[in-house]
Image 1: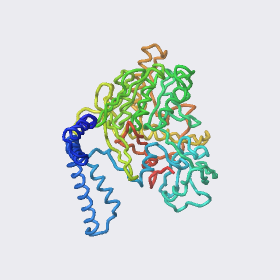
Image 2: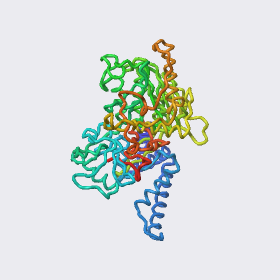
Image 3: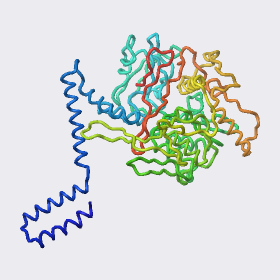
Image 4: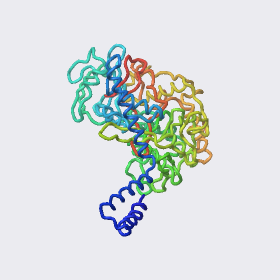
Length: 541
């Protein structure tokens, strides 16, 4: 079109002005006709497409009007319009959705992995008492001294007896910067008033192997050799910084230039990265984490019908010293977690153990709609691993996701035991005296010959064998892992009485939120499923 406008039009003007000798008005009229004709040739089908769009909109408007005027019962016009949009997007994939203005702020916070409040997970027991499941890491509640098992009696001096959990949550939450005072009864029956200031709370996404007595994470699954274990629950804005801080002691440290702290300074010889049950998250965080361990090569490619290919590559600068790595995945590992596992495996940087991943390899972009009418989250591309393998599981596909090099299956019962054990370890508990703790430790549900986590056991056995071959471990005695909650360790806190412990781990999603290459990705909502001992779902104010 540029060549037409810059070359053809002046020649036409000269032709009509100089050759024909027509007056200026007639020449201008003829030139306009020619220009319209030329533009018509340049944009074939545009007017027809616009007519189709108008016809579609007119049909929608007419249907909406007839429903409003004639349906047997009154209808909510707003809900009707949202349903029309959802019906259209329902013909695409599950990850393409419309976010109306009323849900936009909550949705954005979920993508960022944050919420406003004091940072405690609550559940209402069958006897009506509201119990603290656990405070959130770094939250105002934890800093104030709230611990798992505490019972809430009053909020700002008012009794909550007889109230339901949503009513109590509403009392606890409030604007950022305001204070709230909770009257709590600890597990030893001591009652205290704790005051905390509401703030923006970031959900933790990086976990260790077991809690120490001070509730800090112990990241070493074995001490000889020193094999570290890090679990990522999903990829949010703060995940990479937290991983780097754990490994080298400071998220701002310049690797290769500054002396390293963290696990590296503690003599870490190998690392097991657990991405099981990880539904995904921000692609940029996944790329940064791979780049931390890999000094060259492709990490991931994204391609779409109307998107140019985008290639993310590793860089030598800022790469950690090379140590053996194993990545754990299962059928609930999706999206960004598949990118991390697949990239490290394809580049021969890590061994992958577990079961084939979920196969959610699509990229979503958040597109703001005109007139502040919400956002459209639309699938625009697919992920491709360095080998060229498509991550996404399409309809009738027989090959997808990340296929581990060592397959270790786990049935549903074994997964439930694992989730229960994880749940126990994530709780912040108040240290108990020896007298209180005596007799409360529960026996493991699986004998030592049947570890509660066979996939992790396989990873440890494989890693130890590798280190023995490399001469980095002197001992030869076999290592049998026991659940963290039943390990004999002076650093592990004693368990509370069984009556105060939630019996089941909150359910994890088998699908994932989308992971845009150009927009934030999903974080877990600040709610969890109901423990078996509860009458109502747990919630996080």
